[in-house]
Length: 405
Image (tube, rainbow, N blue to C red):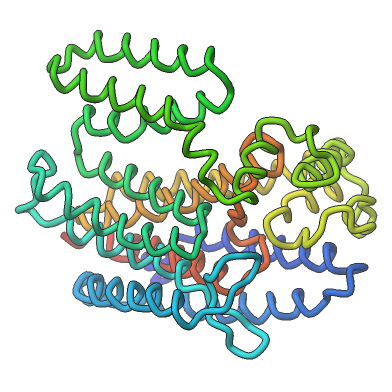
């Protein structure tokens, strides 16, 4: 017979979260040890405590109540996104924060969770048919509205996370394969075009073959193909219209060594840190790249370098295993819960966390452009940590109510 705790709390997800947050605090302590920034370490401990309280509170929100407040929570978060454009403070060229004394509150972080709830609520309505343009437009609008407001800040990294959320939930909700191709193919074409004509042509050829084998309507296939080609051709023009710092980040992604003392510096140093850790690492507080502060503000987006250098492949791989466990359990939960709403919420949480993990570690290892996407539970940041804990609370709430219809 299950105990009350086992019935209400998914112990694996809970413990994996505790371990990751703890490892994050240890990594932040190491990254700030000789950088004169120990205040970040103490703040993260406070945020972690607040986050765990929030997570537990979310777990025990009645299931039906959570469904009822999905739209109001989303509405309030949109109002905050509008307000931050007018009243927010600018940091590193982005007006994304409300200044509260020495602290900053980032509305876009909590909007990730509220967008999951709102879109899950909409898509779980039995009257919704994603083959109808109106329903599809509304579903897309729920995510594209915050994306537009976030791009105005501007914060491209966070906006990309929302796009991943939209694609994942539409797919899980049963959107047609044609729609998914229409959403995904242009993105691949755009990235390929940045690498040159040959990669772009390869993507276009693969798309052409795919459309041929799935035997889609010729008119629809022509639209998808033409739009994808147009996006790829337009990439260089769009690249020229981006802000200089955004252009530099993309160029650095393509060739980090091209600007080793500028935009490529962090990427090169992070790869050195990861590679120098070896199998077992250099030991706690013994990482040369970390302790000599080769990577500025390493406790934020480049935090993964710290455990990789100090605890080696073993430490870095352990973190990946914990992330994979949470994501796997999230997908499994989405497949087994009785409620369609709960299933969509689980996939939404998995999508946001997975996007952050893949992009951040890709950034740190030089496989993706540096777009300011932090690593869940490890990177310093109060708003981000609270957002992640809130989303874990949602997963555990869905587990607690897994038998609800």
